[in-house]
Image 1 (cartoon, rainbow, N blue to C red):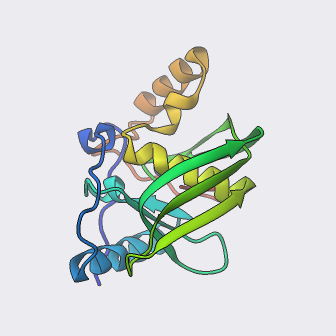
Image 2 (cartoon, protein in one colour):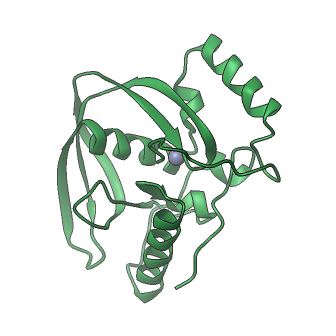
Length: 176
Ligand SMILES: [Zn+2]
């Protein structure tokens, strides 16, 4: 196994739409192992393939019970509203209160190619929505209102958090 460098805001790979996975094979399983290692090392609770420069629709996560991975995920249902202080491994050291649906139902495939269906609430639901955004080339700052986003972008510039900049300590933030 080998850890990846996590791509940071400003890297064009984070703005592209990832492609459907067509083959669930040994190479994909190795990719998932390496992504999990990268996620735990960071440390973070979730990591989408584009964050390690791979344009495939898959992400990994662990909200406590152990490592999980989903391939070609789709949100089929969402409900409610929940405010949560959200951080991202690709925008290190910062977090914002973001409102998103409280509950989501996600479907996709596991690494054996079997259909999976997960109904998630609160933190896990938040993680799913955040990682789905990564697969569509969307970063959490785009979920902020226009004024907050302007301030966020200035902070990111001032701290030079993007490509080539420092990698601050995550310091207790929930990083997805
Ligand atoms: Zn993220």
